[in-house]
Length: 129
Image (cartoon, rainbow, N blue to C red; front, side, top):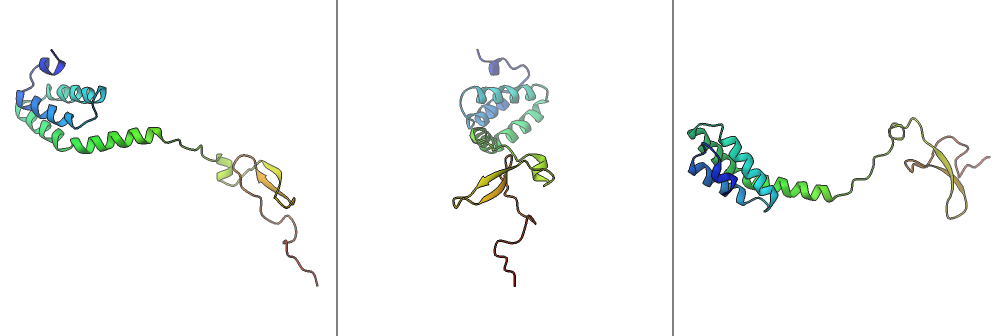
């Protein structure tokens, strides 16, 4: 005998509506968890409120499935760690000397990868007259 069959004080109509609502959810532990959760909520309501709750659960079951699918996809995405706070605020970088393919020297932050620009000398195409 399943937990749904033993749920005290839940009307048969509300049970059928909850079963229909949770059928759209992914099978397995997720479906059973939401079924038990809905039946737990129903057991604290009056008969009329049980029907209203169960109809609402049925009406929003596809939205819940989309949210669960999105959650599963989001869990599989690797999120890159953000740049350090001081780098983002442009307050402090850890500059290291680097070389471009032509062998010229420039400075790049070891933490965030930002190239150093600024007044470190004349512009590259500086022409004196």
